Image (cartoon, rainbow over all chains, first blue to last red):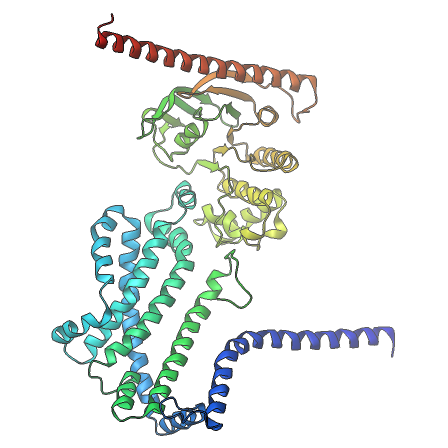
Length: 281
Length: 271
């Protein structure tokens, strides 16, 4: 083997090693995140298999998996998951739109803030369940009341996040926009929106989390479909495996939708100069 | 021609920052403004930039009264104020978005090359040193080709080497289009190295106290006897401006104290 061939071979080997390393690095993040639930599942499975617990009220993972497969094969799980996802999507969209607009106006104008914020803060303190009877009276027991309840849940964290972010945009940065004679719309597009984006993403994620919490409350309002219905059904028919399967489905869908927000906004936040643990988001 | 006509500024909290400041600056002239802290240097610059309106008097550029930021006036602040979500090139292009893409790219590339940051065009502001960030700020202020460029202590946060380097960069850039420069600084050497004229201000309220012509050939040698002579002249003037100001303040305080004492005496019937 010539020196050149040897060098090329070395480089190829190094390249392969690097590729393997980067693949491992990419897998390491999600794998670490799965460690705790997987260990807990294995632990509980062992506890039940060894006979230390009957596993009747808290079924072992094997039973939950079997229920999961059974519900999925019959199409029931998908049907309920889609119903829940649709409600969350519509409620989240409405809540985000309202929270963003009201939050931006309140953050921008001191007068509007003094006018609206005290009332909104008082409304924010009302527990979600307290709205249920009123929404049923106003909007009936069908989709409108459920989506409205979710939108209310999403609205407040988004409103609070946007208002705080807009109000705290650095005056010196805004002055740069003034020096370059930006119009009101340009100021919003070129200075305020990018400046508030990191806080906005956090507000969206908080809002989505509350959306998922509120959808359960909403589906307790006499729903005939949705993961919340599966929970109630499991409770009434004494099927803990179905309840845990629905809970796991909530967890999976919640995590996926949260990840979607993070992934969709990541390219816009590459500029951030922040302290973050490896893989943290 | 930039003219300040008896400009005064009183802030809502009652602070009397400027009083009767009048100044004429010709196109292409470099004027440095020096003075102690709180003598209204930055307030004057903000009034010229149209960022703050004078309480009395007016700022006139080419016969037009400045009431808001104007396309002919650029400003470089003490801190770079780069927009962290834009790359270096994006920051430099910030004020020329209205231009066509090829012209915009050409101006940005030229400006970055002139400040020695061509290879950093795609870097984020967080990846720059303080001196590099301030060079980007200089490029950003110059690409719209302002007629007047205001500099509010732009090098004060930098070390001596970087400061001297940036002063050279600034002079090189100024030579391209020769805008009017008004430089506020605490650094007397910087004022003499860059300016044609040095305005000395005195505080409480801020006024122009003295005007000194630098009158030295460029490039200026900071170790020359001529430079040293101007330096002494400026320092003497600064000393006198601060002495007179503190003497005035003392006199004002004494007058007020005497008045209060006399009032108290009258009230007590001792007089």
